[in-house]
Amino acid sequence: MRTDWNENQALLVGEAVTEPEFSHESHGEDFFRLPVKSLRLSGAEDVINVIASRTLLERCPVRTGERVSVAGEVRSYNNNSGVGSRLVITLFAQELCRDRCGEDENRLRLAGVLCRKPVYRRTPLGREIADLLLAVNRSYARADYLPCIAWGAVAQQCARMDTGTGLRLQGRLQSRVYTKVLEAGSVKRVAFEVSIMTLEVVDTSMPETVAQL
Image (cartoon, rainbow, N blue to C red):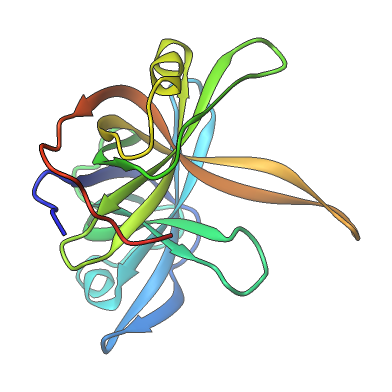
């Protein structure tokens, strides 16, 4: 699997919403979920689920309401429990810091390939929008599948792209509350997606192979 041009870098600065809660164990290490709230320039807020190891949290303990800076990678996995979203998006922490935290910040850089053709549409208010699914390879024969959203002229650009197109983008990881209609009634759920700020097509020079979704 060719991974030399793939990229996945994220930086989140904000406020811890709750205490870290145990998430799972992997390869003998405990991992915890830490929701972090970060404000946009518009005043809206994104609440991102950060996954941090016990080792990181012992070096940098985080309590409710404390400001924290998180550097890491956006990760995805399939939720097979039947409860909540099928594709779960988190920010995997590689560095945690409570010192020198400035203003709220939420930015990322990604490079990968489209694993399905973008869906172009217009909102009820007439805004142009495109939904993408980007596959970003890790270094050990796995890939993260990240839903992305583009607006306006960038959405028009995406509408002309095909499956397998290599992309490099900058944006933010955002949370969005929506209503899911079920047989028993409607429930509020939260979706996570990458909001694209800038986008460029990458010449991969050779076919790119990614794991199957």
